[in-house]
Image 1 (cartoon, rainbow, N blue to C red):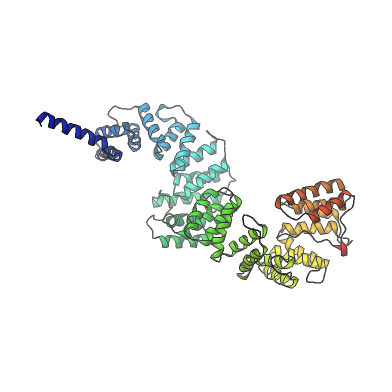
Image 2: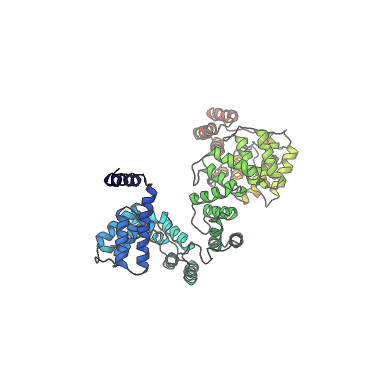
Length: 540
């Protein structure tokens, strides 16, 4: 083979090798060019930095596009000021998800920098994107846009939440703006204490030189030390302090810290309420086997708060927490079995879970065990045991549901000597704590009893006007129907009873008594009760 043929073969082989080079190798070479630009910039050789970054930028390297745009904005380009070129490269970088480029574009459109026409909608768009990636400076701009209604509908509450969140993460200017809101009463009531609180917060951040998102604490603090400080602050309800320390441990995988953060976001303690973030932290902790977060995550799925409503997932997480002895999870799981929500309806299993939580000392579980004994659900009916568990429940800081249940037993003579006076006394105890079901039961009693000392449809209607939060339930409409019937307003009574029946059908509840009452009202008769009282509809 001649020299010419050998050279030809070598060229062909080299060409094939180039074709077979992995794309990663090409990407690495672009990154090397970008890094050379950084090295040149650090040496203040801005001309070389620009050349390197321009080469990498033209190959689509987002970080180089952003740095090149910055270089031009800083007026360090060898070509001199060129606003349109700076804007071009920042847009390229922002479109590839570079958060700082998104933030800078937000500022450009908000202020009209680089000779750009002010466009608040674009300012909002880019600031929101950067905020979603955790850029606190962008969050501060976004809050200002909400505060002034620029590019988005004015929303002082949303602005306040954004300022609070940024300030808690160590952004001093957001703390300053919060302080001024409370000083001037801008979107919030004037509050000198809150003004001082956020002013002090801004000073603390600046004094600590902290803009890392961890407040005055050190990001490299020992995990257990950070959790211990955060937990102590949480339990002392010093949520500002808890917000400094708990994220340090939570971000490093501490399940307890993650759980506390989930609770803080769900309740709006230290930050504005955000069920989505709460769900995220509880999910992290729950997957590590943290029973408290497993329970809270189940409740978020149950309510559809921060997550799509999913009763099957709620039941699954409740099982995990209940199996670890979590009392509230055991009680909630019992309720799901009692009502057949995404688990087979089974009163025996429901009773077993209620009993576990009751024996663990949970007042709500004790009330439900009493209920199951009273009505013979999942266990043999036993009024004495029902009263025993109701009294244990009521003894815990006057648990109002148990007080109402005891009143019902005196009202009907179940396990005790029937006494209207005792029933009223126990109902009044529950009413003092604002128990809505007891308010409905008293209204029912006033409308249906034949005891002239207590009968008063007018007072019953007054009681109903004070029922808040349960005015679209079967018991509400059924009680209102009885009141209208007592006042001989039978068309209204029929209308309300039909509403109650429709709601019971939706819930799959028994209909026989409700249908009998409807027929009674249609025939023009009020509800009459034996022995002077009617048993109100029980509720588990």
